[in-house]
Length: 432
Image (cartoon, rainbow, N blue to C red; front, side, top):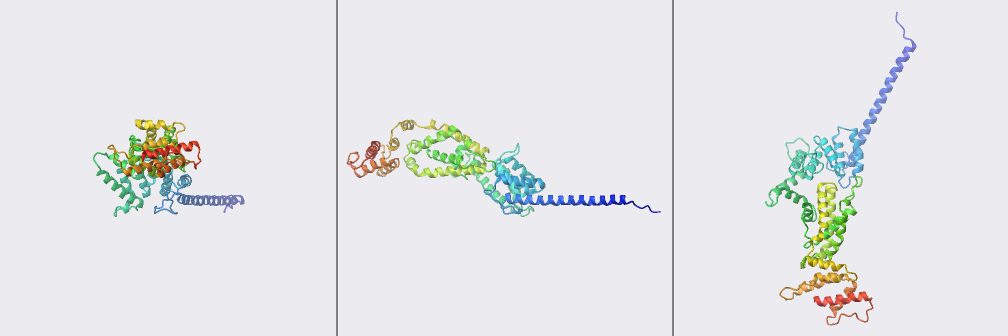
């Protein structure tokens, strides 16, 4: 006789089946939701940090200048968390850290993505080339960088390779190979480290100044007054614009207060010719070069900190030696310059009167002969130091060479202005 199930037991079975179906549906929905979230996170990371030359990117590329490290890090960290095996997400997160100057995190992620992602291998090469974020025990080395570049280059450099190459790596291989060859061919009086440093400094507007600062070479302020103008532009750019987007990394505090305080007087003295070293061409060319050199300093500050960041050893070495050079600047003045500088602080002395000594001996050769071209150049140089009142006296002497240096009755000017007029007039006749 067949035992019949009770209505209660049937009900229990049905409920169990329904519960299983419901639980499975929830799990499936959660799985689909998680999957969708993972895909979306990858898309958002790609949109924020994909490399323009990455063949695997799924969004328009973002250049270094366009990438905003803070936002890219936030989006790509989520993408890596939801997609822990995705090499592209790790590479893009590493790139955001790299541009945000967080070199150690960047290197670690480049290494994790590297074996499966050629673009990451190229950035590992960059790290060795620039000495950024390297693991303990590893040192900056161009030859090691070249090895990583070649791995990243893949089939673009070796047709037999099955690894799809990263285009930027091919360019890096060619450039670094050429650079290393040039370094092997340089003069035997410079060692390998110096050659590498010199080559890397060629990216700057005035590489000789950057190299001198990096090597700690004492600056001859007496013969290179334009360096003061260069450093003025460099430091001004640091204070005004060097602000990174990864939480506000500000480079200006690297410059000491003492160095900054020395720069103003140094620049002023350079413009007055006190640091000209007695060189005729040096002083006359100074005014024409001032703006060009100042602008070069600004551009080199941007280049240094955009390429190396504030915290890198390269930047810190250069700024440290800049602080030292500025703090010791007065030690390099000659006795003639010191006498002139001491006269500059006297109250009531018109500016052009203490500048004019700079040009007192220009155009007067030792043998006593007169060089008309140098005399004209000397007068032009003196004229550039004058204010409006001084120009009046200068022009009066030029137009009335035999007249005494007295303000004409039809010109009404203040006593101080009359003093400047007479001084400029007399100096013109003396120089002429």
